[in-house]
Length: 133
Image (cartoon, rainbow, N blue to C red):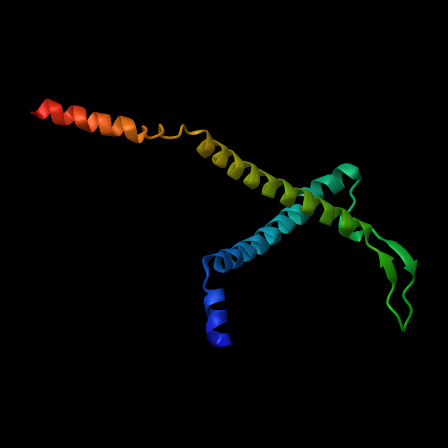
């Protein structure tokens, strides 16, 4: 088998395609959450804290000069990123919790009764044959 055929077989497996779809959806979800945090959550929090724009919260280590840019620690953006992470982690937790609940319900379903032993089956067949005669 050539390397291209082997790669094609690998790439066309269901798991790889499912993973690719998951990554694309996850990336889009991350962007939505980032926008939600930046545009919906952070403005009211900034207003409650005293009209602070978190994207402008920073600590300057070195001032900008004509030759170099300023060196800053952008802790406001870090706070926003932490909030993004918490929201995404909570959403993933809820999805996993739902999947686990569905799995538990499937496991709790009663199993079919076990098949009777061969001796009983043979005896029932003999009984049924005797009834027909």
